[in-house]
Length: 373
Image (cartoon, rainbow, N blue to C red; front, top):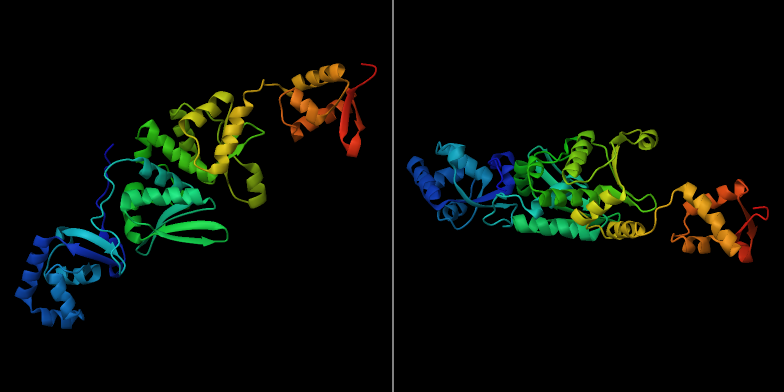
């Protein structure tokens, strides 16, 4: 899928930080006009530009600072949209040779978009286009860095503070991503049109990256949950999941979060064996812990599904056959782990006089059937 990107406007970036190599024909024409108007000596004195630097720029040996270029084209009365550039660098060192805006949708571009919607961001402030990504998981930082390198051939600036990894990129990269995604900060975060109009594989990669950052796998509850402060984003995400055949519950405001933090937060939940399996097969995670939890959730579906009422019938039958059992042994016989939910069911049975409880060795609870049962 080809991208319909906007032409980037380099003049929006702080010009003193951008260096360009001009197209050879344009460079020769511009400097010939400059000599027609005035000598290089007079121009260098008037605008405080080193004469030797001008000579080197005239011959195409060094890059030209965007601020100086603007002075030159204004002096030569050349329109901004007629300037032809061969390649660009940002800052004093050459970082971006023959850099171009991505021309088509790719896995890397979708991964970047997902992380910018999650724990990353893309914003503009006084000519600085800020693009960054932060996470505690180093492998997610590595994935983001690799995708950015595939598209822009730059490593980015990495930092590690307060147990959080962060990687950021120069304004030039931010401007290019801005031309594709638009603003990606706070309440302006959104699913870009290029994702909405892409195929299922690209949509799945976007969702995977966003869920790596923002979702949680609730093993005991057999569900995947994602909570976001941006209501429009959560609504669009629900529709995107539906497009991939994954049903979710209705999106709802998280009342607990509002009560404790005094902020709005909305959530959707993926639950049910079919939906969880669909998510596992078609989307998945890159987050190591979430991969493990999702696999364990899938494994848990191998067991027969019982309701609480089923357990209240099954457990007395087990005790009738086995006389006395600990919670660990009961869990093993019904193919479950001895978690708190099972303990609660056992306590309810004891409370309602369906089974009895006594203390065994080292205070371990031992359950047995009432004698009058």
